Length: 136
Image 1 (cartoon, rainbow, N blue to C red):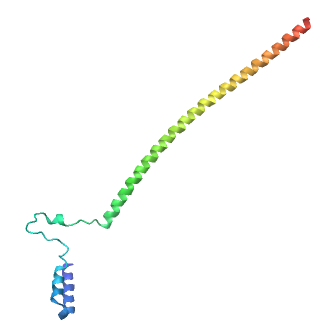
Image 2 (cartoon, rainbow, N blue to C red; image 1 turned 90 degrees about the vertical axis):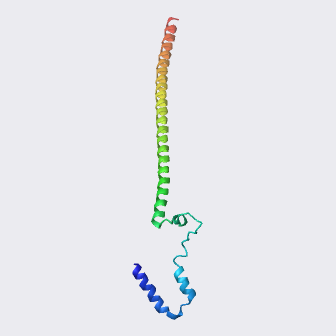
Image 3 (cartoon, rainbow, N blue to C red; image 1 turned 45 degrees about the horizontal axis):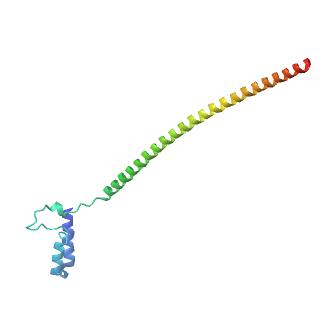
């Protein structure tokens, strides 16, 4: 690839030929190196510290995916916790409903028993009055 680049560069020089100025030739030689800072004699930092790492599009997409995935996992955990709490609430409601149903059944049984006792008492009172009237 470097060889092809050099050949293209040479062909461009031939095309432009004598129209190139000294300023253009100097600019052409510097343009590739200008964006890389040169270490000074007093600067002992490594060149790597001057270079800025730019993540690739794939890396940015991967990081975005991981962030969204993490957010969704948190939401799923919250929903599962809410689901568990709702199940507990439903279980408590079922127990309370069953307790009320048993209380209702007992109350209905007691009412039926009272009705029977009332009918017996009413019958015995009638029988007792009939007996008094025949003796009188």
